[in-house]
Image 1 (tube, helix red, strand yellow):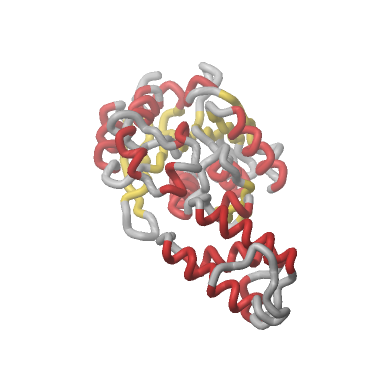
Image 2 (tube, helix red, strand yellow):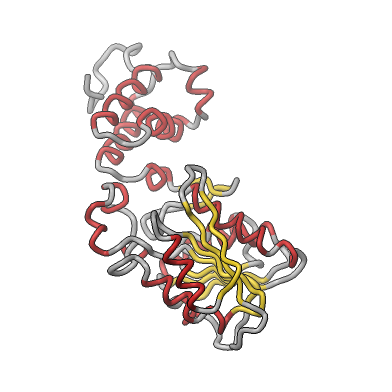
Length: 301
């Protein structure tokens, strides 16, 4: 039964239970990954309720205005638009980040990159300098800065639009004084003499030929600039590895998120660039997700 364009049913017709059932069934036909969750998140936003309250108030009847706004959200999700863009936010590392089509939607697996960065710099807990290249929404840079408030963090991105949103997130989350945002392409945004104890990056890593095969909510909505990793998906890793020794202090760590099946090739690139003690960390699903290594003490800049 379609959600009506105008509410003509009896006032007890469109309850929370009923609209959730409708939206869930509608999304299931289009095979999103989590139809019930999507339906609940969108309705929670419209009604200003959390998901527990939706259950408690399951017999509540929606007003005409609420139905209209929920219908608009459903139509946007039908088109494939990510729920995070519809809501305008996404949870990451225990905090809420603003997101829109200027940046990638932060993924749970990227939290592993933050965890690795914190673990591999634990010996420098009280002071240090970190750089986050391809910062996007700023989720990695801001999360690290808030965990290491005595560190200096520099975040770069080639997209000025992405940086504007990253700055907004830093200000909203209390990291405005802890992160310096710079526009530019990878190391090109950094002063030539800058040196860091940590460099992290979640760069574009999808092979160019595979972009058209991505799910519609990624392919049609998320910025291609943040997805396209070149012919083999390794273009950015080569550039990160080649100049790492110029910007890492001896013992400094380079840590990157990688795509499916890329960990071995990235570890080889790191080794070829003179980086040592490589580690590969898996995400919550068991996939190899983060490759990290450090600059050897004897490496020359």
